[in-house]
Every structure is written in C-alpha cells, then in structure tokens.
Length: 243
Image (cartoon, rainbow, N blue to C red; front, side, top):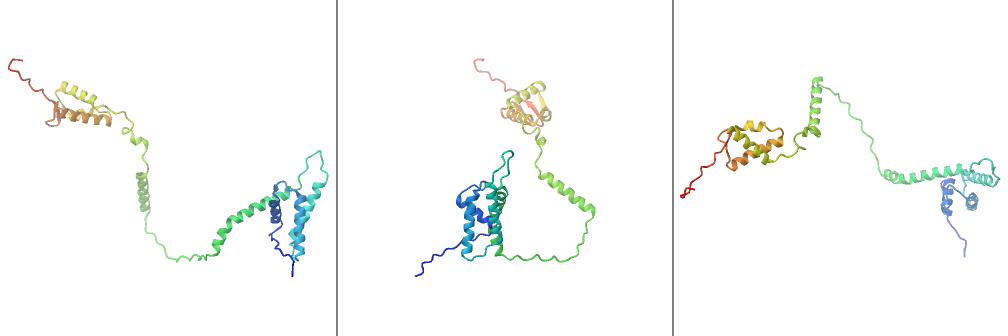
C-alpha cells in the first residue's frame, strides 16, 4: 500500500506575487515587513519547488538574494548620528506598485473576457462619390440667420421682459370705482379711452376695466356709446300722506 502524501504546490507568476501572498498569510503590514520571517518562508517555498523537480525562475532567486541582503542590512548596527534609510523601502515601493497593477488587472479581466467572444468587423471604406455644392454664400448666411432666430425663440426669456407684468402691487377695484365716480361727477360723461389712459400699469388698467363693469352692473352708470355716463337717480315717489 502506497502511503506517500501528494500535495499541489501553489504557482505564482513572480516573486512579488509570492511575497504578497506571504505577507497576507502572516497578516503583517506591507510597509513594515518582518524580513526574517518572510525570508524563511520564501526559502522554504523554493526548497519545496526543488524537491518537486520544478524549474525555478531566475527572478525568484534574485528576490531571495535581495531579501538576504536586506536582512543583513537590518542586522548591521545603524549609525546614530544621522537617520539611515530603511533598506526595505525599495522593496515596499515595488510591492505597492505590483499590488495596484494586480487590482487594476482584476477589474479589467471581465472586459477582456467579454471581448474574446466577439468578432469585430473592420470598417468598410466609403465609396468615393463626387460631392458638388450648389449653395451660394448668401444661402449660407440666410441659413445662419434662421438658425440664430430659431435659437432666440427657443431660449428662455430674460427677466426684463416680465417688467410690468409680474412683481407689481395689486390695485384695489374699489379705489378705481371711486376714481371713476369722481370723474363722472365732475364731467357727467367720460370716454372710455380717457378713463383707461389714466392707468400707469397693466394691473391698474385691469382694475379700471373691472370698476367700469361694476358701475354698469350696479346701474350707477350707463354706456350708450363709447362714453360712460353717470345715471340719474330715479325720482322719489311721494306717499298719499305727502311724505
């Protein structure tokens, strides 16, 4: 009975991907790598690759040498007078850049797979047809004027165009009734045109028009033609007792 244990060694595209895997596995900060721990696990992975007769890429060996160099730099005594540069800085920068590219590649992978199942037809060349223009410069200018006029009509009106229409105070009709009665008492009859000419705004003109209608409805004025006339009050009838 064969009791040999077989296992599958995980494949990595490069040494940086293997380092990111070890950093995530040990749950350490990528900016503060424990080089001694990561180096031991890195070399253990290379030993297992050799045991399985797997070809080790030269980039993995170069990274191992770099990790060993960083470890020796950390173990050496550092000068106290000036702040020494962290020997891990270059490796950390490379790992951060590689991680960004890995994430971007993962985002673009669905788009790439979608394009693999499609065949795009190359654009067909347009037929070379002779193009003749029969328009005169005057035609183009007229078309430009029509286009600008159409744009002006469809544009939102300016606030100044509403001057005198909105935003004015309302005019009471009762006040205009009194004004019209005063004119009738003074002149007996007044042309409608002269009454409306006294208005200084549209609101006042509407109030005058309603005042005239109100006087006609109450039978206090008459309009036989184009002149408004004050209606005479009906004579008072005497009672049998002389009152």
